[in-house]
Length: 297
Image 1 (tube, helix red, strand yellow):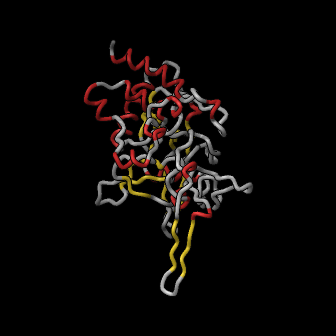
Image 2: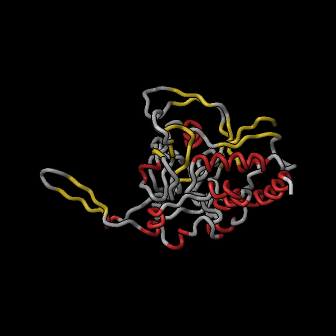
Image 3: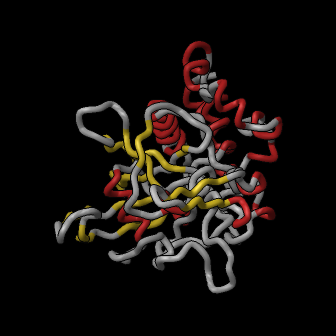
């Protein structure tokens, strides 16, 4: 079987990956296929105030951001296309520490069909970039595609931030408001919530201390993609669920990169658009989404 034949067969699978569990999605009525233009949110050219600065503005060119995080199903198709050493290299990196954290159900998270439409985790920046390069090849084997030539990649921090704000420069969270819950008390993203009875504070003349006795285990899991409402650009899960890789260095003199958005394993502070965290190696709460550069329409 030639490379082109293989890619063509994989493209057929990719076309249906994002629609295989639509009935289980709460907020999104339909998850379009990657080759569908509706899978992508158009982010217009704009200028905005840079986070953490006093009036410094930055500009971005127009681009397309995936409305959804890359899923286990999509990443598994990528792994199936590989062989030998390369396949072994791109397999998920699950450390013993992570396995200790995860229960029996979560150790099968990457392979079990019940988690097909959940975000992929335990991948490195190199793994994510290899996936993007593979998907670019697959896309160009599809005869009826919306654009003649494209390139998929990971967003830089500026692109991620612009997309997360949904056209609202002052947005604290992707939905625009400053609160983590709506008027009905419902969480607006998948972040780590503690029961109030688990939070203990200690007071004396010398110090004030807050301690958490236990977490809410039923909350400490990733959710299916698009289980929470989208932002104004129609993008889901930019806050919570899993943190998302960018290609921007966390500190220029170091090798770690910036992850954004917070996760199911982190408190609401990390779900704010302005917060950033260092990503040094694969973990159980960080995944990624793609941007699309249209080279030829």
